Image (cartoon, rainbow, N blue to C red; front, side, top):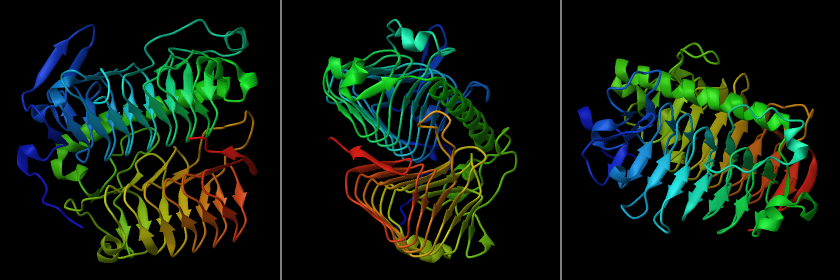
Length: 421
């Protein structure tokens, strides 16, 4: 499905609300992503410090959204604010593909510096992330070099009106409920629903663990990558505004992805800036562009601008909000006739969930079915396997024909538990 794109100076991120550029001078330069300040915010900023919003991102109440420098906002992300419920996002943070930051149900959302909102995660209601900080537990302070501090929200994680302190994180498909504070030094385990301060600060209750050095090192890498993408996409846009739309080149010019590559459809490299979905970089799709459009839904991001290459076989069906991405120096290989449910995520490489556990490439076999909201991360999925709705397979060699029930986490080859919310 296609829709008319904005053209000329209006070929920018979708902005609903005020169209008057607003800059606020604080300790650092911040900007509001109004019409004059997208996709580069602020439009006159140096590439090294500019924030970049993918043109498919949606911003509602733009005058009430404040962004710090060197922030990257990915494809189909949504920022929703009002005068009474503003959004502030600090410097060197990133809001990745299909992330939702929605303050309308509360009094506002404040997100600090160096916060990672990974694909499909959400922050809603009255929430703060990475602003407050409490003393680290001795188990963390004695073993972890926390550097400048960071927060990581993983795939499908949700912060629902909670306070997430600096030096913490929320793992895949986990949630922190309204009124809860996740203290510094703790990471919510995959799938867990943290509904009390006790659960958020006591590992013996089974919902959290202590932050470790691998978590911090991983976050540092992600922050570096997204700062680099903000700069590189800004440079690409200034060279050719059409190049940040549709099926097109990755920006290159980074220490993890030096060259600019076009995607290919049925063996033919081509750009199509009018494509509604985003297909970026060294992506080799078996389908022609026409068949790909016929088989796919809306708000799809296939982004080989960090890890590459991606090889994607003939698509059986791809629902809305699907994301493909990979960490640096990793790739994705997907077979033929795979069915992708709405919001499914296929991610190459990955975070070490257990210290010293080896990272794996991501391979998905023929005729696999990924349910709505399913996650495949640094895993091999055998042909004909089925992964249920809102389930995640991480660090696992899943055999052919295997069935993962809905709302199930499979971690490092073992069933970790059920998604609790």
